[in-house]
Image 1 (cartoon, helix red, strand yellow):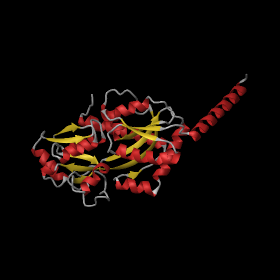
Image 2 (cartoon, one colour):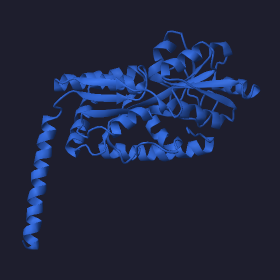
Image 3 (cartoon, one colour):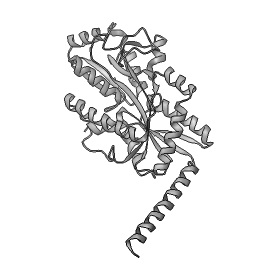
Image 4 (cartoon, helix red, strand yellow):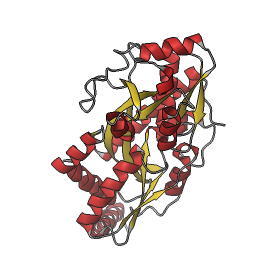
Length: 324
């Protein structure tokens, strides 16, 4: 066979493979889809994943199962999905913690970039600076002054080492120049409870997780971590306004698949989830939770994660944060 015939045969084979893959994508999903979540119920990765699962199930007339596998800053769940059959039927709901893990663990059982395929960013939103009611702090400035008066005696909670809440507080600690102690918990609900009861002094909670508690007066918030005030709580100033100029931190959530998932299936998942997030129902639901829809292409989400890993590495080094 001469070179021209070889090239023609290769082109025909490639076209056939492409046609088969596209046909498989059209049939997808062929059985229940599992979305693995690395944190306990009640946090942003859980709330957003469950809502999208419901909508995808309605569209596909197929069961979408959410599977909470908390622990080790989301890395247990990530490892499950990294090693799953790459056919689109096992997905991973991620947050900032996915990037943070790459910055604080000396060794992970997977490659944070190479072992996953981005589907889309699903939502982003600010944190609320919650303080223990026993402190009497009315602003970020008050909290910083109280912490400086008692170095090493104040604690802050998080949803685990390497969680977004951990890094949000480490950034606050670093910029404020305070000596406070990190106390990790299994999930966001536990971290909020410990702050409300006064066993820890503050927690940077995803707005979605603490919004109703603050509105009902059961939790005290003295600042919002975003660049502007949250429309859901317009009377609460930004942390930058409230005593720490320049501070900003945003939580984000997204969806990943195993790296070798066929591109046609990744693109279909992206189209379906993006279309769902364009609906007024989802927008209203997201805003009520304190986040905004943030769809993007798979390629853009892959780059987003690479950029976030670089940012996380810088903060981890500055704050001397290591998980092992």
